[in-house]
Amino acid sequence: MHPSPVAVPEAAFQAIRKLIAEQGYGPGDSLPSQRDLAVRLGVSRASLREALSSLSALGVVSVQPGKGVFVQAVSEPQQSTSGFSWPYAAHASPSETFQLRYALEGFAAGLAAVTLTADERDVLEDNVEAMRLELKAGDFDCAAKLDFDFHRRILIASGNQAILGIITASADIFLESQKLPFIRAGRAMETWQEHRKILRALARNASGPAQKAMQEHIRGAALRTGIVFVAPSA
Image 1 (cartoon, rainbow, N blue to C red):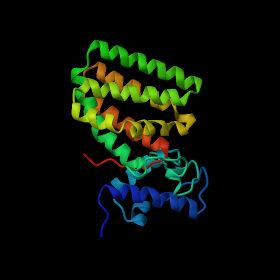
Image 2: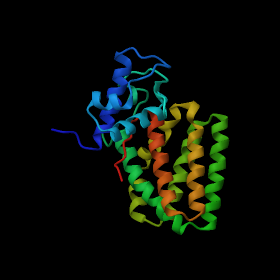
Image 3: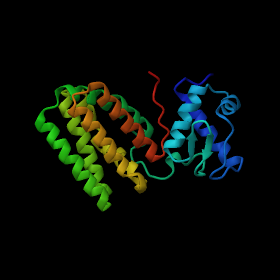
């Protein structure tokens, strides 16, 4: 059975991590060319680029145009979900939760860009500033709650009660997924930066950019958690 197109980049991601670990590559070492890697792994260049993008976001490699791919950090191939506990495994995996959020919340952000009121925008601006302060103070639990509230308010602004109902019914699971990215304290401010980008798109009533910014944010949150998040191609 051949892997589905969506699964190929994830398989390439794991294969590259295994290659780095087993071949003894260290920080600063250059990997084979992208062309050679694609042939070696039996994947397309597009799938390889997606895998390298995920590895770059995790800080495992650095992709330098015209120069090559260089190892930044060495990690175990199966590290992606070993650094945290997930109490909702009987309901859904962390990866599945992020994928659901990617689909639902991205669409909802696009809707909210059309319907957002001035009062709703002001509340979101206050939320983003409050998150900045909590992150600077190192209060990640409070930051996660502000993160959840930011997303919930966008769902409310979208006017789609079905999406809001799904998220609300599984609020504990979604809140837990919003705590996970903060396990990497050094990258916690990325959440705030991404929220600012989403808010700017919403304030411009830019539906497409708002949807894209939200999806990039959720994908980034998954990567900060150490989860390979492969999005379907457009």
